[in-house]
Image (cartoon, rainbow, N blue to C red):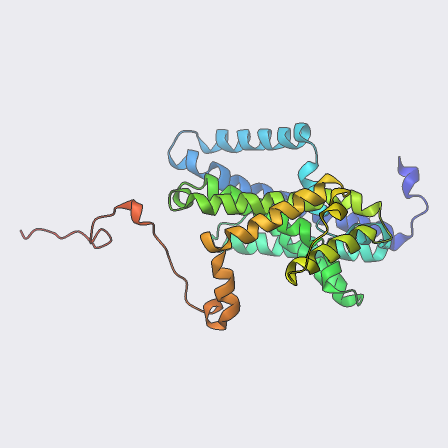
Length: 295
């Protein structure tokens, strides 16, 4: 096995050792950072002793990686374009690894020190996005090509959808249209990712020309030739249907705020607001401190 490293330069070998040290450091910080979040409730309620809770957390985290595979890791890595992962040289790649791990380690330590709840996985996603943008600026690549934006939005929508459904506080104050809009957006992006293999089969851009002509006719209110779309693969057709459905939902959901945001810059700079549904039926003065009877 060590024969694989026999032809490497000394600085490359040292860099690989340092990269391994950075990875192990991040995993160590990830362990005491996320384990504390996972076991805090059972320890605080005295359902388990601290020793048993930490041991069980370590065992099941290890089993999750062992039995669950590396699907999550591959999904996160795909935030960077495939061309960047294939064509990057050794020195450039190690610099990217050092940068993203250093940023993730610094953020995890900072949030742990100040007691701010944070996820190591989310931290790693942010550092990968930062590295992709920095690489695009350094190599004079357009920012739109520095990151797999469609994958990034897909992951972000998945996190928002999970939070909207499984967080009891947010779920209780959510309208069914809020969840429906997130679901449709998530399906739309997923179908868009499915179209990528089909697009690679048409490198001449013929399919894109058909879709562009169709979109231009829709916007300019000209007659549309539906027979041209009938020959396209099914992911493109589903993508079109979900896209038009999203436009139809704009007036009947909170997506309408997108237009007000475009119309006024002050909407983007306004103070944070908390919206409560009327169906909560909270009594008047529920948020006031209780009155104490005189002694």
